[in-house]
Structures are given as C-alpha cells and as structure tokens.
Amino acid sequence: MEVSHFLFPHDWRTVRVPEMPSVFIKTYGCQMNERDSEAVAAQLVAKGYAMTPDEQHADVILLNTCSVRDAAEQKALNKMETLIGQTRKRNSTAVLGFMGCMAQSRGQELIDQLPDVDLVLGTQKFHRAGEHLNSLLTGQRNKVVDTSEEAGSEATIREHLLNGASAGKAVTAFVSIMQGCNQFCTFCIVPYTRGRERSRSIKDIVGECHELANGGVKEITLLGQIVNSYGRREIGVKDGKSAFVQLIEAVHEVEGLERIRFTSPHPKGYGDDLVEAYACLPKLVGNAHLPVQSGSDRMLKLMHRGYTRARFLELVSKLRAVQPEMGIGTDIIVGFPGETEEDFEQTVSLCREVKFDNAFLFKYSQRRDTPAVAMPDQIPETIIQERHARLLEEVDAIRGRKRREYRGAQIEVLVEGPSHRNAARLEGRTRCNKIVVFEGGERLAGQVINVKITDATRSTLYGDPAIMNLN
Ligand code: SAM
Ligand code: SF4
Image (tube, rainbow, N blue to C red; front, top):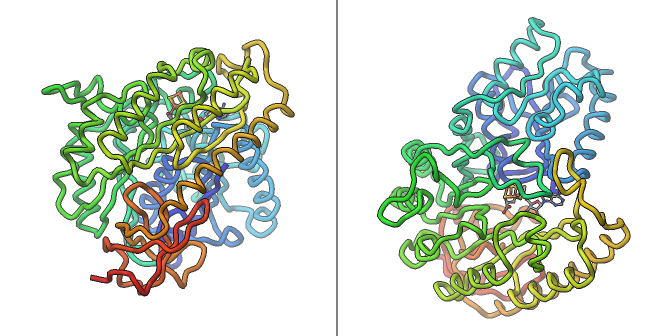
C-alpha cells in the first residue's frame, strides 16, 4: 500500500501560522484519501492551525487510513503505536487521531485497542475535524468517536490548499465528485466504509473547478469510487448523455483548465457516450484506469463485477478505436477464493492481450463483513505470492516494452514542477498519464510543452533538454 508523504506538487504540510497548534497528517491509500487529507488541512489552516511535516513536534497527529487491504490497516496501527510512544513522552496533551476508512469500520474499537488515541473521525465527518480538535485541545472533551452518517457530507470535500507551498503553486488538483459505492464487489470493504453513492451537484463541482483554474490549476482529476455512476439518481440521463458525461462537458467549459482526467470508472457502466466524449472533448486526456480484477469470467461472476472478459475487451477496443494512443491502466486481484491455475492463466492472457500501460496487482486480502471471506477454497498465501510474482513479471515486461516504444517520440507534457526523485529536474505528465522527467527551469511549471523522449524505464520516460521546445 502506498503511503503519501509528499502528496501534492505544492507541499501543503508546511503551511504555517505562528503560535497555533501544529498539525501533522499522514495519508495511507488512494487518491480519494489524499484529497480528503488536503480538505482537512485546508479546513484547519483556515481556522489558524499550522500544518507541519514534522511528526516529532506536532501538537496534533492525524493518520488518514485505508482499509482496502489488511496490510494498510496494520501499517497505520503500527505507526500509531510508534507515535504514541514518541509523542506521549514529550507532550501529554498532544492530540492523536485516526481518520478515514479504518476509523469508520473500527470506530470505538480503535480506542479500546490503543487508549492513547483521542480522536476517531469517520469518512462522512472530515469537515468536523476542526470543531473536534478544538474541543479536545481545550479540554472540553477527553475522547471523540464520530463515525455516524451525515447527509450532504459528499459536498464538504471542497476546499483546497493551493498556495501554501514551499514548492510553488499547484498545477494539478483532485476534485471529489461523489462518495460511496453501491456495487458491493464481494471482496471489497469500500461500500461499508464509504457508504452508499452520493453525488455533488454539477454546479458545485464546476464552481470548485473555476476556483482552481483561477488559482493556476491546469489539470483536474475527477474522483469517485465509480465515477461513471456519478449522478445516476440525482441527475439522470439527458439527451442520451449520462450525468457523468454532462459533468465532463460542463467542466470542459471552465476557462484556464487544459486537461481533465478521472478515476476510477467501472467497466460495467462505461457507456458509448463516455467513449465518444474522448473524440469530442479535447481537454479530456486519452487515459483510462479500468480495474478489471480478473481475466476469468468465473472469477468475475464470483466477485460480482457485473461484466465479462469479452465485454471488457470490447470496451478496450472501442476506446482504442477512438484514441489509438490511449493509456489504459488496471487493478488486478490475485488469489481470490476459488481461483484455479486456469482462472489465473486467463488473467495472464488478458494482460498479454490488452497490454496495459500500467497495472496495479493486489494479493487478495480478506476483509471483514465482505461475502468473499466466507467463500470456500480460500487460496493459501504461498500460492498467492507465487502467482503475484509471475503476473508482476509479465505486466512489468509489457509495460517496459511499451515505454521503450516512446523513444524518439515528440510528446506533449504538462509540466508539474520539480521531479519527486531529483528536485534539480522537472517532472510532467503526458496526456496518457506517463511521467516524463527532463531538465528545465521552474518557470516552465504549469506550461504544456513538447519534449522529445530519449530514454525510458519501466516507470519513467526521460526527455532531452537540448531538443525541448521551450515556446
Ligand atoms: N472502485 C474501483 C473499481 O472497482 O473499479 C476500485 C477501488 S478499490 C478501493 C481499489 C482496488 O483495490 C480495487 O480495484 C481492487 O483491485 C483492490 N482491492 C479491493 N479490495 C481488495 C481486497 N480485499 N484484496 C485485495 N485487493 C483489493
Ligand atoms: Fe469496491 Fe467494487 Fe465499489 Fe470498486 S466498485 S469500490 S471494488 S465495491
């Protein structure tokens, strides 16, 4: 599981207002969690708190947690134990809290297990962080567990921290368009931690995008567990267009934005209107993260995914027909209960057939309350490990070959800022979501430029500054 330390090109963790309690936030998991952390940080800064990257001296320490796999939960629990040991020695009044998915699913249990924890904040309660911290820091309350449902919470992840940065202004931003999931895949805990689907209004989302564009943002990523389910009940289909396509069209009108991305769409509801949007809307970049989970129809049915291998392949063909250079990524689970060697080979063959630009491979992890836990034929860990390693080798080789094909190509890159690995260089993304590293001055941040690709590794493309078009 990924852990974000430097989540944004603009490092909001260093926003400082002197002599106010300082707050350290660590984020585990997906982009939605990153976005939630940013919204909490923005909320606290507006109340006068100081964000700090220094967990050793913070007055408030918050871990924004992920429950999708057991390893992510264990990481956050271990981290909290370490923090308790370090923090309580130096500051008996510091506030320690869990937020997000694990906070939602475990609630009071977390305080029973770790009595030094003061705050447990659920996934519909991020906007209440400030008021709860205030009551804890002023001694009005001793412990707070707030995990109840709250109507309208989907519209509260709205504020950003765009300018608080040591590392310059933000060029890209995440925009949360909805919360929850109604799909109930049999392996997944998300519907239990994030609740049912609730969508924000198009007007509210477009308003946020205008503010971001006015703040200098050039690229936004629309976020949701199943983005293409956006507004199904609240907005519905108009003129043959789904609510999600209506939303993309409205965001497309926002002046100043150059690129629109979204993640994750579900293959099941990927309609022709959305496929056609790539042809009609130039700001919509040619990239699709399409979690397939398995190449075996038998597994897909047991997983309750709602599509077949053939339907998935048909969708990939339609997308590539509209945009041959489309970057296609995926998520795959290895070792779902009952997965035979033959089922697994179907996944390997699907990967060979599709040639994903990117694939995140996950070892199946049993999650509480999910139907898959009670399914027969749970796969032994050793077999899961072995299949995972085999598939990883396969998808890495495919990715490497695809990346190498870019050598010599002239490619459009949105410059995001200094490279994460080497701050002396710049980093940007292609329209199909590939990271490109090249040399150049920071004044290029926010510009769309053409870079000639000179080298490629499995994860990164490199451009030659000598032949870079700086205009
Ligand atoms: N909503 C997206 C979709 O279904 O298309 C995915 C969101 S989920 C939080 C991210 C990924 O985590 C999933 O695509 C799946 O591959 C993986 N995942 C979810 N539950 C898992 C489990 N119990 N064990 C292993 N991986 C899991
Ligand atoms: Fe989880 Fe399935 Fe919903 Fe994705 S679609 S969040 S995998 S239940």
